[in-house]
Image (cartoon, rainbow, N blue to C red; front, side, top):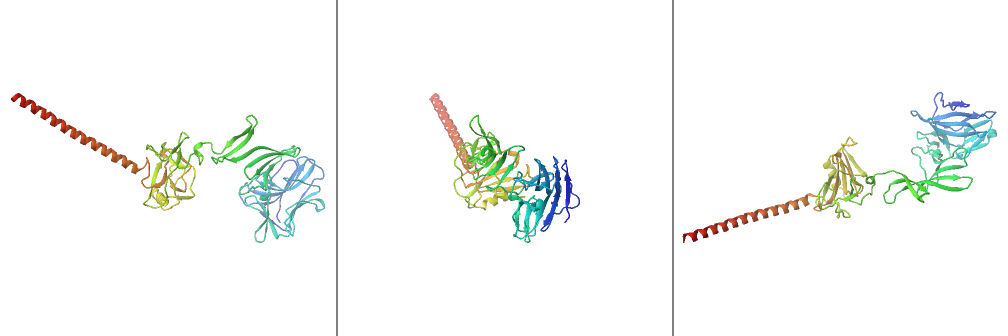
Length: 423
């Protein structure tokens, strides 16, 4: 097997000579010699594998490092020059004379020292392991002939979490400060994500901070305990703007520029925003002749519907929602802002609405029972137009009749005066 080797005494050098393959098969072993005398700052490293990626890529190394008067032997994974995984993260394996990495014939990956003393192993003997492989994600795996994973480094996180890696209640990220008996631990619990400071001396767990999702808003916040006010305070929140929260307002409510809630239904018509709030639109969403759309320009949703269409016209977007009985509303974007294409999102519930500039090219279209636009719709406008026509016509008729009556009265008076003078 072709081996990439690098050793440094004081300075840490990352040098790869030749081509490093991304895997190692059973029966192979790599050895790094340990200095006879202790040398402060010594690091000896043999790079045995690397991924076929552009730099910075992942590399696997067998390392010997001077630590506290001894030499530690470990298997490590690097991303560029950053160590992202270490077999000796929790418990160091100290060696003398030599440090050996071996993938045994029976499929067990292990580190051994003098007289074949085992200091670390995967415990995969007898499971059909055929090779050790480093993936493009940085996951170090042992696989069998069918490429089934028998062991992976992602199941044993250290202080770095890589893309695609998962944490659960059985795993955690830990960090060990130098010259300290305490260490940090980021843990997944059933109701929160918490960062702890753990002390070996006092055997206590001191909570420093925790991440939490708000029950009312759904906002993700980082909280710490303030002894001054004797309660937890948020030092960071993912969403700082009230109108960016999905439930800033009730369903069918709109969060305005002033961070106040208004309702789609209203008595006075002005840009689809008013003050006469109800619990929402009543009625179902089916039937082409039974529903219509209330179009709100300058209104968008902080959510994105599960159904998305691109390069689609406004009319086709309305048609998609109209034909879907589960669709309660649709958001149409003409592509004037960040996107370069027309987009249509369909929603099964009308929440997360907020006011935006009318020139943004966004139109939020709410499906409502026909004829129930309230104060917004064309049906309501028609009612006011009809009332206006009736009132105006009535005034005209009254004026005409009044004028005619006044003319007749004046004419009668003139005739009466004329007849009196004649007699």
